[in-house]
Amino acid sequence: MTSKRLLHRSLVGMRVGTATGQAGSGSHAADGKPYGKTGAPVDCGIMLACKSDHSSGSFLYTLMLDDGTLRDPREDVLLNGIDLTAPGKEKFIFDPKITARNSDVDHRIEADLIVVQKRSPTHRLVLNGKKLDDQMHTEGRGPGRRGEEPRKDPQTPPADTPPEDLDPLASSHIPVPRNRKAAGHADKEVMAAAVLTSLSSSPMVLNTTPGTPAAVPEPASRGWKECLSASYSSSTSGNWSWDASDQSVPSTPSPPLSNDVSKGFLLPSQGEDNTEESETTHFLFEDPIPRKRKNSMKVMFKCLWKNCEKVLSTSSGIQRHIRTVHLGRNGDSDYSDGEEDFYYSEIEVNMDTLSEGLSNLTPTSPTTATAPPVFPVPELPHSEPAHIALRCPPCPTPLSQSAPSTLCHIRTDHAYQGPAGPIRPMGVGEKRHSVQHATVTKSHPPAIAAPKPSAGSRKPRGEAKKCRKVYGMEKKDMWCTACRWKKACQRFTD
DNA sequence: GGTGCCGGGTC
DNA sequence: GACCCGGCACC
Image (cartoon, rainbow, N blue to C red; front, top):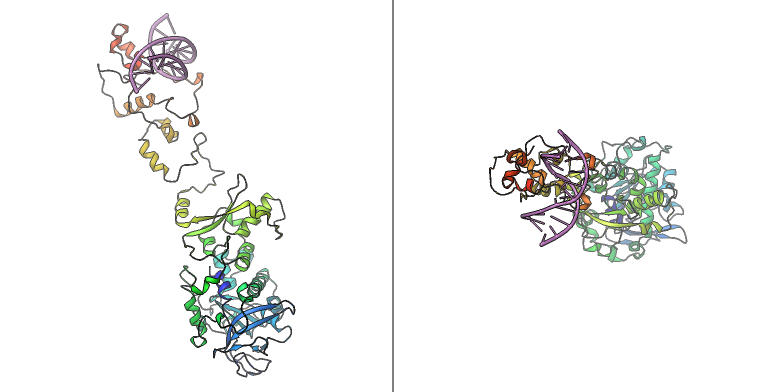
């Protein structure tokens, strides 16, 4: 959920920095220090809000400088040698598309900050110390997808590296050709654009007026990195929570899932549906995740179409599934009239339980599994086999071995055992066999009745002598009860 | 026809 | 559940 957290936390404060010693073109930096064309301070300040001005199409910035002062966005602010207030320069920084065109700007997003570097022909996003595209490779999709090799910059700090420890020039080593127009590049552009769009359209941002101290979570002297560490409970452990300042973060009925869900719980259908589109879409556009979401409880989205058990980790994924599979719409189209919202539901899944359940499942799909054809026991929980084992002692006969447990209703009241008499000791197997004979038919529920043997499939007559043969009609009282009742002999079994 | 026993009915 | 029996298949 790193990326998600970044998205929302970045509304609180972004630090706008600059590469050391990069040439600028303006008059003074955001921190008030003059830094002309020949040099620039390393850090310019913390961007508290980035607000879009739709009338002018530009962005308004609320900046908290390192000295704690707030910079009026209308001032002639120059960051990274870029005059933010100059026409077009806003987009020069924050519109990755334009940035790509002017690809000598290196975008870096470090947790809550966006570092704009203007030094190298690279274009890169870094989230929480991770290169954004690498992060997406490792968390959201498999490496090398679409043939794009995961680029690993050996100089890129690890994900948990504090931003202040990052080499501000690190991204400049990423060998991204200027004129490269690969799909991965476009993805990064889209992602960055969406991030920034979200920044500019978020209620939190829109409600942040320039100079509003409430938007400053911590004293400026404390430093932006402290703000980061104080705001996050953890950025590397996988567990995270919002601090009190996050109370204002609106919750949503359909929160997206973290990427670790995707990698840790890959549903059979996710491989095709949980595409980059869905991930990025959620990362970029979806509402924040509700607080107090237990890390073991994940929200999944289940298709409610009849006979469709599709469960995806993202709402966009399930919407796409519904659109494409059930509504027959163009899967490539992102058009949504909201109709698909009615066809899926949000479910909470205990990942611990689910993982256990999945571990018990066979790899075969439930729809294609070659389950016992006569005895599907769909409602049985996964623990049912143990229960069956208790209910069904070992049944060594071929019938019991091949038939599901419901056939193994052992009747312990040997109904036809009959009175005393010349009781012949029976072996274990023999007794079991006799029991098996006694258990046929009536005790079975009709719904799970075994294949009813037709008249032609009558059990072959046993070879053993029965009570009639042994005792004769004159000693009928010595017959076993079953024989007297014209049932299968319980005394002399085959 | 004798035998084994299934299926069903009665109590 | 115990008891009984019609009826069928097998030998």
